[in-house]
Length: 324
Image (cartoon, rainbow, N blue to C red; front, side, top):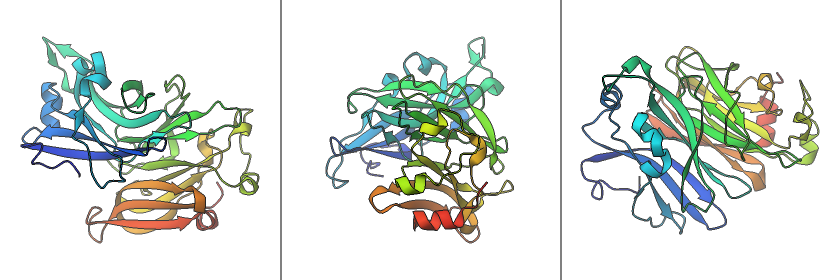
């Protein structure tokens, strides 16, 4: 982390979530900052949030960084009163074609209090996003996934030829299956959150990564129509998703492909890129070379012994992804 403990004495910084704005050549790095002695469990039980939502920026590709800026109150607003704790990522944010900066996060929301004290079993995690329309000068809380208990999430834009692009969200759960939802970038409201039984979760869930990819037109034309709706016909992007592929534990990291992102049932079976213990991952698209990068945790005896970088091409992905 570029934020040293010397600058934030007695605190720990967690969950780095980078975001790049190409127009200003600025890297934003979001994270949460919490006093070292205060645990997440303590915050949930007491209902007293101790996590601060912060970010630093770099305009020289990470050679130097700004001082941290705290945007907790700015982002949460009135919801801060009902927030037991919060965090961002980990993973990456996105910059939409319109220039909107979007950051994934989640909070523990206090749904009920008795005599002013939170009811612990009614303090539940919910994924949400926050965004900026002025190149990071100000930040606003967007939509949340309120129907299910969801945690760490990532978002990706599904582009359409009509210009009515959608925002796709993939969120961690502890309920055996991943939750996914779509939203209009204009409204920033997720209205169709649902469990996808094609995407399993290990016990207690695990963070996963999702990116949007625009394939060459010739390749795009070969995509299966599946259960296409009129809106699906206008979709010009695919989705890639990385995550452990077993429902029994964090093992066998795989990459899934969906050529029809608005049809939940059209995710391919995963191509396993790391056999054995595997944990958190983050995907990136190398658009000019039609290749992808994945940074992930893995190990021999545990899923977090080391961090590995793996690069693969679109042809490798297509050759190793079975049709649904």
